[in-house]
Amino acid sequence: MIKIQLSLLLLMMASGCSFAQESALRNARLVGGPCQGCEAVLDFGDRQLSPTDTLPEFGDNEPKIKITGTIYESDGKTPAEGVILFVHQTNADGVYPKRGGETGWERSYGYIHGWVKTDADGRYTFYTFRPGKYATQPAHIHPIVLEPNGKYYWLGAYFFEDDPRLDDDQQNPVAPRGGSSGVVSLKKENGILVGERDFILGKNVRGYE
Image 1 (spheres, rainbow, N blue to C red):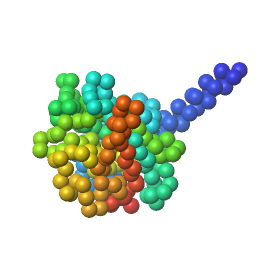
Image 2: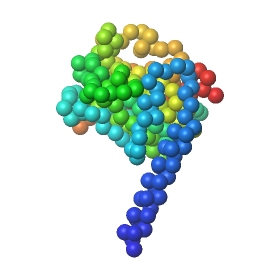
Image 3: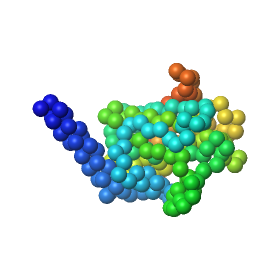
Image 4: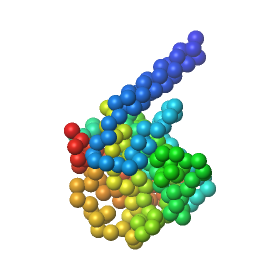
Protein backbone atom coordinates (compact mmCIF):
# COMPACT_ATOMS: atom_id res chain seq x y z
CA MET A 1 0.00 0.00 0.00
CA ILE A 2 2.80 2.40 0.90
CA LYS A 3 4.53 1.68 -2.42
CA ILE A 4 1.29 2.37 -4.32
CA GLN A 5 0.74 5.66 -2.50
CA LEU A 6 4.34 6.71 -3.18
CA SER A 7 3.99 5.87 -6.87
CA LEU A 8 0.78 7.90 -7.10
CA LEU A 9 2.45 10.84 -5.36
CA LEU A 10 5.40 10.76 -7.75
CA LEU A 11 3.03 10.55 -10.72
CA MET A 12 1.06 13.55 -9.46
CA MET A 13 4.26 15.54 -8.96
CA ALA A 14 5.47 14.70 -12.48
CA SER A 15 2.08 15.64 -13.93
CA GLY A 16 2.17 18.97 -12.08
CA CYS A 17 5.65 19.73 -13.42
CA SER A 18 4.55 18.80 -16.93
CA PHE A 19 1.46 21.02 -16.70
CA ALA A 20 3.53 24.00 -15.50
CA GLN A 21 6.01 23.57 -18.36
CA GLU A 22 3.20 23.21 -20.92
CA SER A 23 1.53 26.33 -19.54
CA ALA A 24 4.71 28.36 -19.95
CA LEU A 25 5.01 27.15 -23.55
CA ARG A 26 1.39 27.96 -24.39
CA ASN A 27 1.81 31.52 -23.10
CA ALA A 28 5.33 32.07 -24.46
CA ARG A 29 6.02 35.71 -25.28
CA LEU A 30 9.40 37.25 -26.11
CA VAL A 31 10.11 40.47 -24.20
CA GLY A 32 13.13 42.73 -23.86
CA GLY A 33 13.75 43.33 -27.54
CA PRO A 34 14.90 41.11 -30.42
CA CYS A 35 16.81 37.95 -29.58
CA GLN A 36 18.15 35.66 -32.26
CA GLY A 37 17.79 32.07 -31.12
CA CYS A 38 16.02 32.83 -27.84
CA GLU A 39 13.38 30.27 -28.83
CA ALA A 40 15.91 27.66 -27.71
CA VAL A 41 14.64 28.07 -24.14
CA LEU A 42 11.26 26.71 -25.34
CA ASP A 43 12.69 23.66 -27.04
CA PHE A 44 13.14 21.24 -24.14
CA GLY A 45 10.66 18.79 -25.66
CA ASP A 46 9.27 16.15 -23.31
CA ARG A 47 12.07 16.51 -20.75
CA GLN A 48 10.95 16.76 -17.13
CA LEU A 49 13.25 19.55 -16.06
CA SER A 50 14.90 19.74 -12.64
CA PRO A 51 16.96 22.30 -10.70
CA THR A 52 20.20 20.56 -11.79
CA ASP A 53 21.60 19.66 -15.19
CA THR A 54 24.94 18.56 -16.62
CA LEU A 55 25.97 19.89 -20.02
CA PRO A 56 27.41 17.61 -22.72
CA GLU A 57 31.18 16.94 -22.62
CA PHE A 58 31.38 17.79 -18.92
CA GLY A 59 33.14 14.51 -18.19
CA ASP A 60 35.76 14.91 -20.90
CA ASN A 61 36.94 18.46 -20.22
CA GLU A 62 38.88 20.43 -17.63
CA PRO A 63 38.54 22.57 -15.67
CA LYS A 64 35.13 21.41 -14.55
CA ILE A 65 32.74 24.07 -13.30
CA LYS A 66 29.64 24.14 -11.14
CA ILE A 67 27.48 27.25 -11.54
CA THR A 68 24.71 27.80 -9.03
CA GLY A 69 22.49 30.61 -7.84
CA THR A 70 19.04 31.89 -6.92
CA ILE A 71 16.48 33.48 -9.20
CA TYR A 72 14.23 36.01 -7.47
CA GLU A 73 10.89 37.52 -8.35
CA SER A 74 10.89 41.16 -9.50
CA ASP A 75 10.89 42.36 -5.88
CA GLY A 76 14.42 41.01 -5.55
CA LYS A 77 13.51 39.10 -2.37
CA THR A 78 11.02 36.33 -3.12
CA PRO A 79 12.52 33.13 -4.58
CA ALA A 80 11.05 32.38 -8.01
CA GLU A 81 9.99 28.75 -8.40
CA GLY A 82 9.54 27.02 -11.75
CA VAL A 83 11.69 29.39 -13.81
CA ILE A 84 13.41 27.66 -16.74
CA LEU A 85 16.96 28.69 -17.53
CA PHE A 86 18.61 27.63 -20.79
CA VAL A 87 22.40 27.93 -21.06
CA HIS A 88 24.75 27.32 -23.98
CA GLN A 89 28.46 27.75 -24.60
CA THR A 90 31.42 26.91 -26.84
CA ASN A 91 33.78 24.00 -26.35
CA ALA A 92 37.28 24.47 -24.94
CA ASP A 93 38.50 25.66 -28.36
CA GLY A 94 35.95 28.47 -28.55
CA VAL A 95 33.82 26.64 -31.12
CA TYR A 96 30.09 25.90 -31.00
CA PRO A 97 30.43 22.24 -32.04
CA LYS A 98 27.89 20.48 -34.25
CA ARG A 99 27.08 16.82 -34.79
CA GLY A 100 25.63 17.38 -38.26
CA GLY A 101 22.04 17.82 -39.37
CA GLU A 102 21.31 20.68 -36.98
CA THR A 103 18.26 22.82 -37.69
CA GLY A 104 16.92 26.09 -36.29
CA TRP A 105 18.79 27.61 -33.38
CA GLU A 106 21.14 24.62 -33.04
CA ARG A 107 22.87 25.63 -36.29
CA SER A 108 24.33 28.58 -34.35
CA TYR A 109 24.40 27.24 -30.80
CA GLY A 110 25.65 23.69 -31.32
CA TYR A 111 25.00 20.94 -28.79
CA ILE A 112 26.71 22.11 -25.59
CA HIS A 113 23.61 23.37 -23.83
CA GLY A 114 21.09 22.43 -21.17
CA TRP A 115 17.97 23.44 -19.25
CA VAL A 116 17.35 23.79 -15.52
CA LYS A 117 14.18 24.72 -13.65
CA THR A 118 14.33 26.44 -10.26
CA ASP A 119 13.08 24.69 -7.15
CA ALA A 120 10.84 26.10 -4.41
CA ASP A 121 13.80 28.14 -3.11
CA GLY A 122 14.52 29.62 -6.54
CA ARG A 123 17.76 27.65 -6.76
CA TYR A 124 19.43 26.27 -9.87
CA THR A 125 22.69 24.46 -10.61
CA PHE A 126 24.41 23.32 -13.76
CA TYR A 127 27.67 21.47 -14.28
CA THR A 128 29.90 22.27 -17.23
CA PHE A 129 33.50 23.08 -18.11
CA ARG A 130 35.25 26.32 -18.84
CA PRO A 131 34.59 27.36 -22.45
CA GLY A 132 37.26 28.80 -24.70
CA LYS A 133 37.30 32.39 -25.90
CA TYR A 134 35.05 33.09 -28.87
CA ALA A 135 36.82 35.20 -31.51
CA THR A 136 38.14 38.20 -29.53
CA GLN A 137 35.56 37.87 -26.76
CA PRO A 138 36.26 36.54 -23.27
CA ALA A 139 35.08 33.05 -22.41
CA HIS A 140 31.38 33.15 -21.61
CA ILE A 141 28.16 31.19 -21.15
CA HIS A 142 24.86 32.50 -22.51
CA PRO A 143 21.65 32.33 -20.41
CA ILE A 144 18.05 32.68 -21.59
CA VAL A 145 15.16 32.61 -19.13
CA LEU A 146 11.54 31.44 -19.44
CA GLU A 147 9.16 32.45 -16.67
CA PRO A 148 6.12 30.36 -15.66
CA ASN A 149 3.90 33.13 -17.10
CA GLY A 150 5.48 32.60 -20.52
CA LYS A 151 7.75 35.65 -20.71
CA TYR A 152 11.16 34.78 -22.08
CA TYR A 153 14.24 36.91 -22.74
CA TRP A 154 18.01 36.92 -22.86
CA LEU A 155 20.22 37.83 -19.92
CA GLY A 156 23.81 39.05 -19.89
CA ALA A 157 26.45 36.33 -20.27
CA TYR A 158 28.33 34.62 -17.47
CA PHE A 159 31.97 35.76 -17.56
CA PHE A 160 34.91 34.72 -15.38
CA GLU A 161 36.61 37.14 -13.02
CA ASP A 162 40.17 36.06 -13.85
CA ASP A 163 39.76 36.41 -17.63
CA PRO A 164 42.26 39.07 -18.87
CA ARG A 165 40.06 39.77 -21.92
CA LEU A 166 37.28 41.29 -19.82
CA ASP A 167 36.75 44.96 -20.58
CA ASP A 168 35.25 47.63 -18.33
CA ASP A 169 31.79 47.39 -19.89
CA GLN A 170 31.67 43.68 -19.11
CA GLN A 171 32.95 44.10 -15.58
CA ASN A 172 30.85 47.16 -14.76
CA PRO A 173 27.81 47.18 -17.05
CA VAL A 174 25.24 49.95 -16.78
CA ALA A 175 21.81 48.55 -15.82
CA PRO A 176 22.68 44.86 -16.32
CA ARG A 177 19.77 42.63 -17.31
CA GLY A 178 18.81 40.41 -14.42
CA GLY A 179 20.47 42.76 -11.96
CA SER A 180 24.02 41.38 -11.98
CA SER A 181 27.11 41.95 -14.11
CA GLY A 182 27.54 38.26 -14.82
CA VAL A 183 31.20 38.21 -13.78
CA VAL A 184 31.60 35.05 -11.71
CA SER A 185 34.38 34.36 -9.23
CA LEU A 186 35.40 30.69 -9.28
CA LYS A 187 36.61 28.97 -6.13
CA LYS A 188 37.75 25.37 -5.84
CA GLU A 189 35.51 23.17 -3.71
CA ASN A 190 35.88 19.38 -3.54
CA GLY A 191 37.92 19.27 -6.73
CA ILE A 192 35.63 21.44 -8.85
CA LEU A 193 35.49 25.18 -9.56
CA VAL A 194 32.31 26.70 -8.15
CA GLY A 195 30.73 30.03 -9.06
CA GLU A 196 27.48 31.67 -8.06
CA ARG A 197 25.20 34.14 -9.82
CA ASP A 198 21.73 35.34 -8.85
CA PHE A 199 19.09 36.92 -11.07
CA ILE A 200 16.08 39.17 -10.53
CA LEU A 201 13.28 38.51 -12.99
CA GLY A 202 12.65 41.41 -15.36
CA LYS A 203 15.32 43.64 -13.82
CA ASN A 204 16.47 46.17 -16.43
CA VAL A 205 14.65 44.24 -19.18
CA ARG A 206 13.10 46.74 -21.58
CA GLY A 207 9.33 46.35 -22.05
CA TYR A 208 9.10 43.73 -19.32
CA GLU A 209 5.85 44.96 -17.76
